[in-house]
Length: 244
Image 1: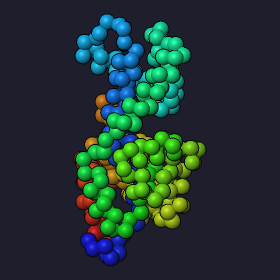
Image 2: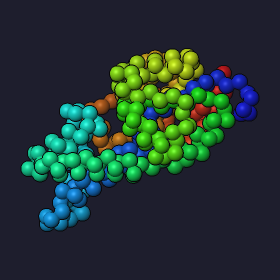
Image 3: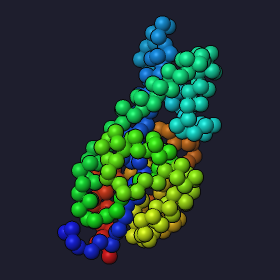
Image 4: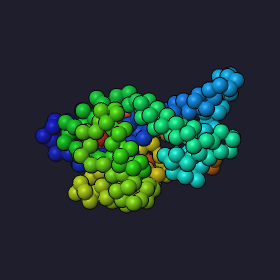
């Protein structure tokens, strides 16, 4: 498709974490480094025991008791294991924030795929449940801060997915219609389902789904396209435009 060809699709709304980069992997590294700090001076654990502890700490962020990024999850973990002191807690929070950001890595093909899609005059936006400061820091870390003309973060709308407001905010801001817009995300109930209800096209980033962390009994929901790797997005968009 040439750059000057009229395109059916006008905008693509991307989830960020686990869609552009493996955020779970980065958080697991951060958990590992916290535990390494807490275990200093104690008897060293075997690799299997370390992996179990790392997963236990990570699961504190998944409970829904506090936010997914809330330091209170670290506090709870420490207090329940009699490891809490104010200085140690402060240090753990510092380690978590530093390691989480430093270990973010783009999925293969993200940068080149976005560059190719930019030749189609599509408008790009990020819709994330992270706050705007964290979102900008992550995008800056992977060199994509200037690749999106709009960032829709949780602290901007006061709502988180699957609430429809973040999607509606993006549509209003970009001046596009649902049928002219594609949503790309790894989370079926939080990204894909609300987008489909609003009439947007959807591409499920299966490569980034947390299959090992999905809640028991969670049903698989419908989507328009399945992406097994980020570059599959090119074929998805080509297919949408050919339908016009």
